[in-house]
Image 1 (tube, rainbow, N blue to C red):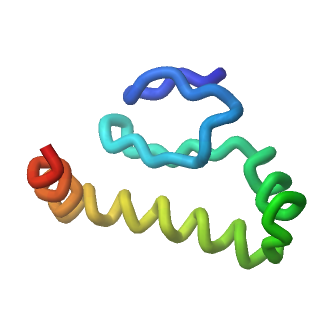
Image 2 (cartoon, rainbow, N blue to C red):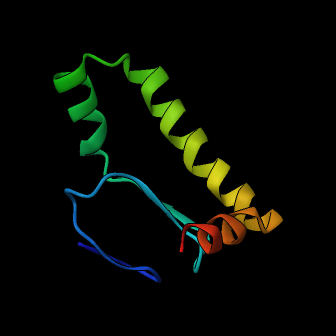
Length: 73
């Protein structure tokens, strides 16, 4: 279990981006699950997940993430 500024993250949690500490949290066993359960291509799946989470970081830097969260609430 890891502690982020967004709270505790158990190893079973999917990868996530925490805007409070501007970090991406990835449990590497998630990639194994992608391969075994969904037959995902390992390198592509890893790159896709990382790019998606870094995209959230860019949204946060640009202020878009906060706007979306405000609209969702």
